[in-house]
Length: 224
Ligand SMILES: O=C(O)c1cc(=O)[nH]c(=O)n1[C@@H]1O[C@H](COP(=O)(O)O)[C@@H](O)[C@H]1O
Image (cartoon, rainbow, N blue to C red; front, side):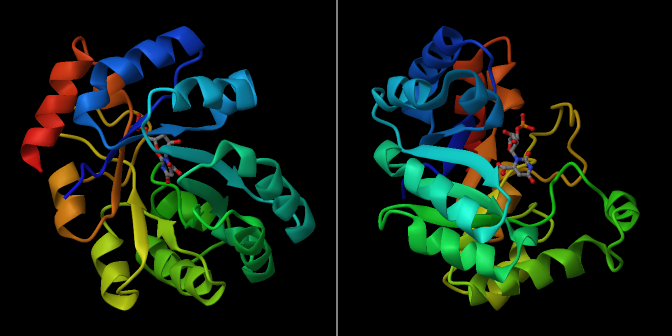
């Protein structure tokens, strides 16, 4: 099985991001370029990282009216991303149009409830019922809209996987014992997420901020 770990390159400097990705390349299955990277370096930055030959997960978390999201999807065809994110809370029509506008080779996945939120945070946004209910509800909506899968925490991926057998599940908020959680609140280990059905394991700071990122990537790989 190929390595399910995607390294989140949340770094402000393009040179530093390129250097980090090329150092850990042999120990990850792909790289994730998110809002910080894309706002700073745009298409040029994505092309630069693509030269390394790893699959690219473009984590843009699109969330707007259907027409605007579809337009954004078309504008990134040229980057040939393996995976792109939209927000499930944008609704069914937005997700349908996002999928219709994406390239055939791109998986479109919907962010359900950010791993940086707990039940209290969710309730403050006006949503009752807790993380499990919210993720299950939005996963059902994403599946009905024809998306490839969702993003959720490792605490919900087992239940979602039982309900959506052939879904593609992206799980961030992963930590080895001893790693600081930082701003993440719904955290599990990479191994637990994989065993519960995650297709992709997103890991950033435990590797990118480690004293020795290569050793940290190897340590994650060794647990899988
Ligand atoms: O869509 C994501 O990738 C994402 C969704 C989510 O709910 N939580 C989450 O942390 N992420 C991303 O996953 C990465 C996690 O980074 P670390 O917490 O440093 O491992 C970041 O790049 C986040 O943008």
